[in-house]
Length: 65
Image 1 (tube, rainbow, N blue to C red):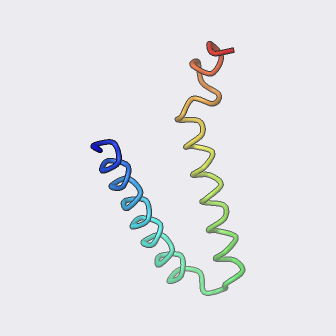
Image 2: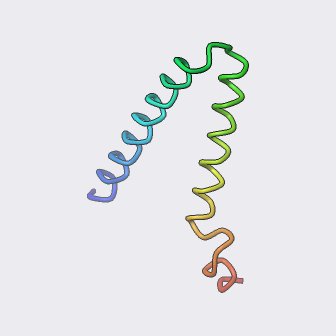
């Protein structure tokens, strides 16, 4: 149960910051297509950093094979 609460807090935090970033992009980049490009670039960078932090390319992944 504790894990579920912590997970929900993390998800809520990510949603909050994603909305803040979207509002900032909306204010700074008036063009919709450029805003989408910037958002997708940030999402790809986030997923790359997340996968790297989870150990996909890290030492633990090399040991498990």
